[in-house]
Image 1: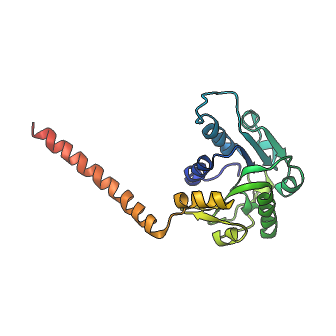
Image 2: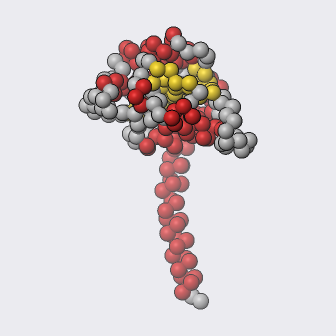
Image 3: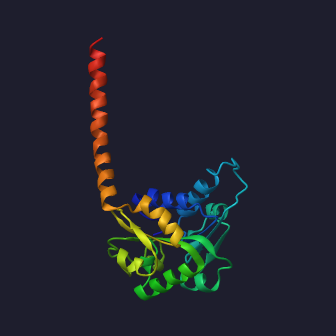
Length: 225
């Protein structure tokens, strides 16, 4: 579909913000959500307070031009129309700091998906990949035959294609593949060790209890006056 599940949004945009790329390539722009969020959080939060003069390059690729709207024209510098398998290795005019491959690989046969990801890794320093854990039985949707789900991936299969790490998510396999420096810098944030994960889980589990205690104490203190 021209959209993707919302659970992964914060994690993916957190990676984008931490990486702070000057150029982004969004494969399968669909509704334009990730281009818009990249434009917002990379431009409007950079301290310039300039609403119209953008400094980042954000391009996209879309096989189904019927998805494009005036929003895409405003958000993206350029949207290449065509199959990413052809566009990425043959038609791109530049390289990128980051490529986004969000809910796209499941629409390709495995061998074609691998070829696309390898082509992206040759054109972008870093790539964020997200695929559904369960691709289901989706066929043509929104009158677009390219929306059919064909290939299912595991994190290990994705990580075999480059250096990186996986990010925990309940509905998607999210994987970051990138330069040694980017992997070293981002891994502790997004893919912490089991010990750190356990500490974080304990901390998060304790937060509701803290709120409850605070609420009770306020009520007790209030009744005592």
